[in-house]
Image 1 (cartoon, rainbow, N blue to C red):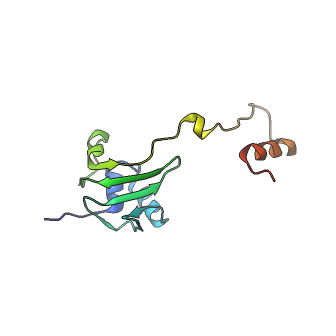
Image 2: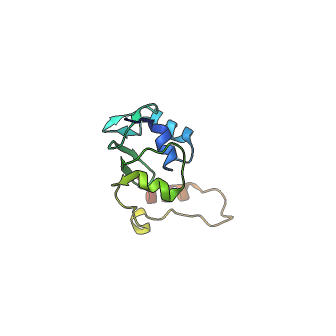
Image 3: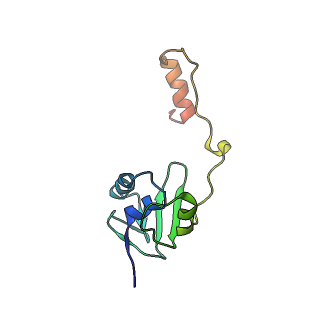
Length: 123
């Protein structure tokens, strides 16, 4: 007997998204792919399918091993997929975010230009 499950429910059940509505929103925005095609939240997932999406720091790629009927704990959820995503970048690779001193007020024009230059927006 072949059991199928909605994509957004599976993503939520194995703890890739904090809520089902976040998983649904990612699918609606076209950021989630099921077997290399853009998937709706209602797409049906079965074992062996490959799911890809982009997180803030890296692209994610997982292969479905098991369907979870409900949300489970993290150790049990980790058995439901095989993660073939690249490793997280180190802090050095990510770079640092410029921080202004507390109480320095709003940035002046020169400060904004310096920040733009650091962010790579300079012309």
